[in-house]
Image (cartoon, rainbow, N blue to C red; front, side):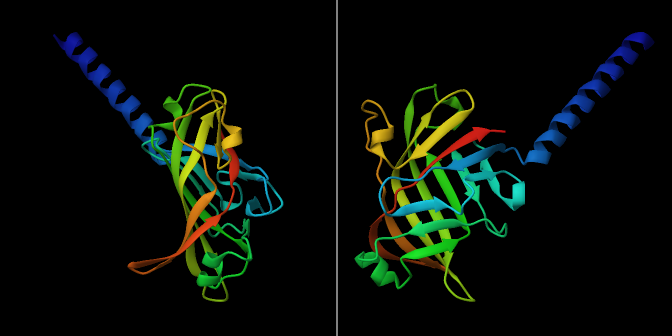
Length: 212
């Protein structure tokens, strides 16, 4: 009986140790899957571009790039990192005039993209899903305001076991996925407890994410 009890105690302690190790590892990453994001130059004269270095790697220079805890959101955040995105709007856009912001802006940003289909990592290679994305950025002056590009229909295609393409260009997506990727986004300003919409703009965006 003593030996059996000892075995039970030993097994119990081992299980607790393994559980503690798994919990510690999850706590270390916050339950997220970290990524390397690489921006591509979108087609056309307007859009969202990198700041001269296309690689935005999780934890490098304070950048955050990851699939969220539930696996259904992709996040790319450069706030407080010094890394920027370069935004080029159509200077003749009525929405831009209504917002009263410049046509060319360099700003830190926060992108949050929800996969309508489900978890990014559950997608089969070569398949495509629709993504609703919100891209927030700051403008302008010493006390910047938060603006937002609200994309209702980006596309994500799984390229390999470790890489996904997120794009606003329907030409990137083969076949008929059942929806159309679009560079059309609503330009909003976000203030405390209030959001104001100025109208639609065309802001192409294209990037890949790869598991670290």
